Image (tube, rainbow, N blue to C red; front, top):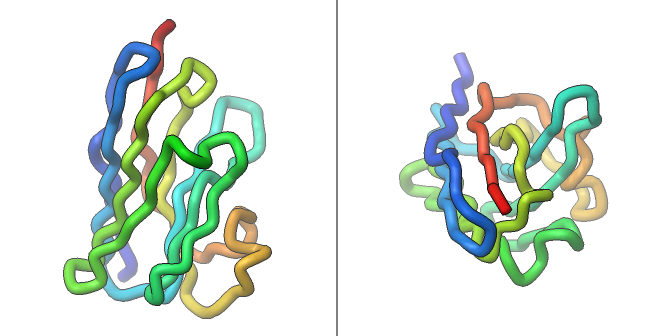
Length: 123
């Protein structure tokens, strides 16, 4: 059974930092972070594959860094310079196959999802 378990969410003031982790139960070629507000579609934040190729949403470029420890099957998201608009439920996602880089920030690309961790940024 595939499991993705996120941790590291919380509350922080604008300009602060948070680090998210996602422990996967097995290796995946490509993993990503998504975020979602109630009633809105899930938004792609960042993705990374096992060669280290990354993709970022324009809204987080230069502030967020995605990384992966393939030996530990653990995905990370370092979030710096947080803004109130970054507040959302953050989800870890994993792809049980291959997808082109252009589709890696699309939620429909991914097969597996974690339960989510809340990030709240106050102004």
